[in-house]
Length: 91
Image (tube, helix red, strand yellow):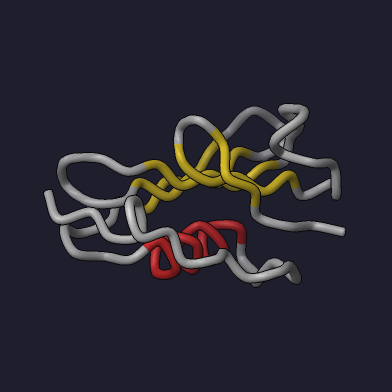
């Protein structure tokens, strides 16, 4: 089952169904907090990537949706639980 997992650098989902907390696997979606908002990445199996930069004030849910849009389809997964510390990047 594909699911978003909290990792040291933000959130990740391995699209092969493996646990993103335990192993790095491609293709993979990642979201990382930064000074200008969440950075949403789709890391493809062929080594290419698509990036969707966020805006200050975006929530982690908006970043996850941007990463899924870069992938081209929504990820069927458990929702990201609210994280009061990292849920909003205010830049």
